[in-house]
Amino acid sequence: MTDDRPVLTTRQGHPVYDNQNQRTVGARGPATLENYHFIEKLSHFDRERIPERVVHARGATAFGYFEAHGTVGDRPVAELTRAKLFQEKGKRTELAIRFSTVAGGRDSSEVARDPRGFAVKFYTEDGNWDLVGNNLAVFFIRDAIKFPDFIHSQKPDPKTFERQVANRVFDFISQTPEALHMISIVFSPRGIPASYRHQQGFGVNTYKWVNAAGETTLVKYHWIPKQGVKSLTAEDAAKIQATELGSHTKDLYESIEAGDFPEWELNVQLMDDHDHSELDFDPLDDTKVWPEEVFPLHPVGRMVLDRTPENFFLENEQIAFGTGVLVDGLDFSDDKMLVGRTFSYSDTQRYRVGPNYLQLPVNQPKGTTVATNQRDGQMSYAVDGGQNPHINYEPSLLGGAVEGPKPDHDELGPEIRGRLTRKRIDRTNDYQQAGEHYLLIEQWERDDMVANFIDALGQCDRMIQERMVWHLLMCEDELGLRVGEGIGLSPDDVRHLEPLPTQTLTDDEKARLSNLGKNGPRDVTGKVMTHCVPNERVTA
Image (cartoon, rainbow, N blue to C red):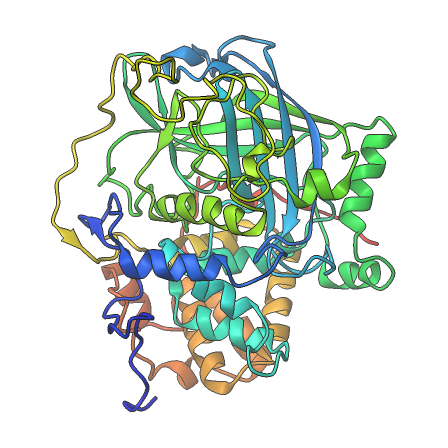
């Protein structure tokens, strides 16, 4: 590295002194709307492709229903949330779901090593609720300001369009240690699900539930497939890909058409709404899981898929999701990824599909009347039947739409105090859960992960290889030693590396660094993580 590199700026030419963190009230948030650099960066990123989705371009939609249990464990669900779709045992809510890959284009392979989108649209009586997640429990980054950088690293070289993907991916990962937990899962067999029917789903972000008294609880969502969790090795996937690029969509649609309706159980993890300083991680950090022995899973309902699209373009290409689409009783946490996604998802839909994308049938709410005061714009065709055709403003004495009833409690959650700042959260702890994941999976899964890392890192520049082996040793010695041996690097070859300038190591991490390559395995006794349920290997 030399010091003559250009200084990163905005389009206005303003130097960017911090490209890692949004501007927030205190280190934990919430984020502020006057984040000029962040909003400009995300707005431009959302408009980089026409008309294909920038991410999640390859996907398949299906339809069905959600059936509520009415309880959370042995408690009535009303004690925790007033959201109507959860209240009554047996209550059914129509839904649509879109499964997708992330990095590839619309005609790419569905068995690529890649996370899978798992986005559910509930057509509730209070309007739509979108639960937009992935098939893996965590994510690569913890602050949405890094999302364009991360996705750019997954794409071809912008000058030559050569797919030097491994070098680009690991160049970014080597400088972003918070991604190690996610990358350890993606490069395990979980990185290639056997089908859409045989994968878990996760909300990933932390949300809040709100009850009638205005009390809030932090919540994470987990979809568990009744069909079981099945994955492919790289060898399995290569055999399928040789003859069929759309194997997941084909499997899903053929199953539904045959009457073999796939089903998932929706589980939640719950946590008191505060910062939980007793934990070694921040509960709002999307690169972390909440250990199940401390925060157990509680089933709250099931999803059944029983219909395929009548028109793939109308109901798959034009379906649009957003993390900001919540109903009463569900709310946002100060998760920095969630705040950023809430802006970006709706913004990209307005650009990709059009400003009136919510008028399209697949995106319209089904259980409530729409009266927005929004008119005109490109491709406007639906008339808001619930509002006065002459009055498109509020307030009015002439029969226009009026504000709805206010909730009994409009102040939610703990009081927030802090100075405006750009800072990382305090408890980053980037290595522990990645190392625990390696130790908790089965031996064949470890072997597969190591082989996948060796194959990918073997395509990378030496300095990237060195930094990645250093990181993997910090996660777990056995993992780093095995991968290092496979690409010709020992702990002595990387011992000279210093922590990244963006890192602040914990005492445990400093101890691991001083004994790099000589640490024993971490103690994972009693630890349970949802993504560590043993896989059933599936061959082509």
